[in-house]
Length: 216
Image (cartoon, rainbow, N blue to C red; front, side, top):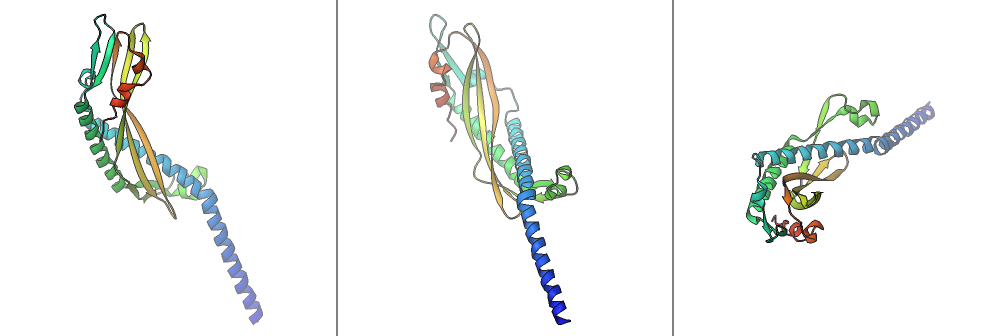
């Protein structure tokens, strides 16, 4: 009788270990990849939304191209040089970065809401069921970088576009492990069609692009 009970206990222990092993394996090889992929995509979407809100709040007026870039012409009407309005560009950049940081902190407070069906790892259950909240932690300061692009649109006609890239870093706390998610959001600040021959140094991404990286 005692031997029979011992066998049952051993069998039960073995089954428990087996189920535990299968459960852990299922989580790491099936559930975890789905959660990570889904969470990263959702976090990136929320981050980009926060940045776009920040840009919209700061740039609530049409920015004049002429207020950002000054063009000098030669006597025959060709472009001699471009110069960036450092004060205006830096002011815009600082305001966007500050507002984006605020929006990111708000994002961290709200967290990331994921439907519980997503944790099953079963494709048709992803996005279904009650939602649980995962913690998001914005890490470090939001940073920015400018880019200047020239594109020919006709004879002696060039489209000049100014972009600002907002770079963010968010940490998402998932079961067992946390992950860092980086996002770059491109926003157009201003553009203009320039009449006149543009020097090759600018068309090839030369001095103006470098001078625009003014953000502290």
